[in-house]
Image (cartoon, rainbow, N blue to C red; front, side, top):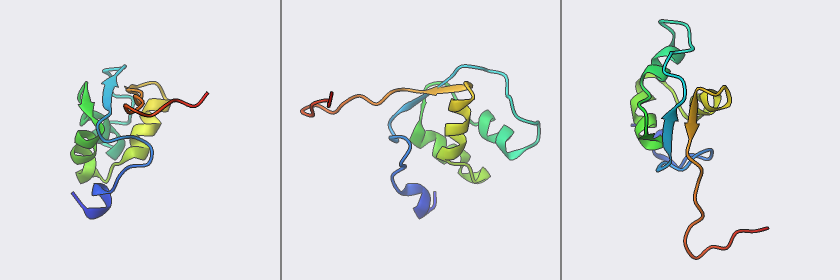
Amino acid sequence: MSEKQMRKTRLYDRAQRIFLLNLENPRRKGSNRAAIFDAIRDSMTVDEFLMAVSEFKGGTKDLQILEESGHVQVEALRPQEGMSMAS
């Protein structure tokens, strides 16, 4: 994994889990985006996803697009202990 990929992601925490909502690949067969979707396994972490898609030059933006289109869901972040939630 490159140094750029090792940096903290802004969109997701690396420990968040990814859940497949649609098992059928929505992307054009043979495309980079299809390969990125095929690399996703149910309940894998964002960190595992980034490692799996690094060879396709994939990243959190690809994950965000899949989440917004309703094909995957990334678990919500939980507030850290000791931190109060703003209302």
